[in-house]
Image 1 (cartoon, helix red, strand yellow):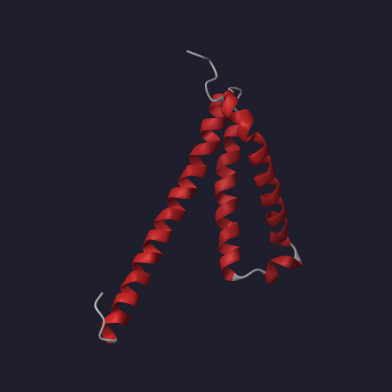
Image 2 (tube, one colour; image 1 turned 45 degrees about the horizontal axis):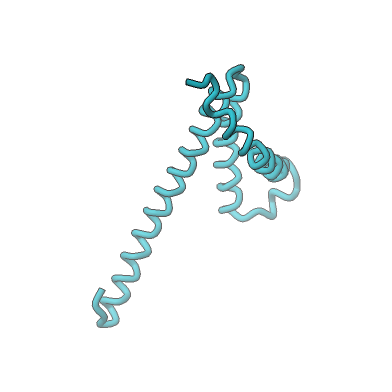
Length: 110
């Protein structure tokens, strides 16, 4: 068994992570600037959730073992995706119910 099984994958995703980190830092820089006032409520909430997730992702970078770094960084990222999916499911269920109600009110079958 190889000592660093995730290391090749880490090398492949490093440029993507770096690009995402740059974008995050650009948005995070808005938090104390006049630009934040121009963000919508949704954008501010998105920025807050990204800061939480990226803070958790960054915690693993201090480990000496690159596999530990990878796993500790990816777990919060995946959890963020799960949270987003749960929010999408919840929102779409509500939208389906609204559309079904509208159809019923207009004499249509669901």
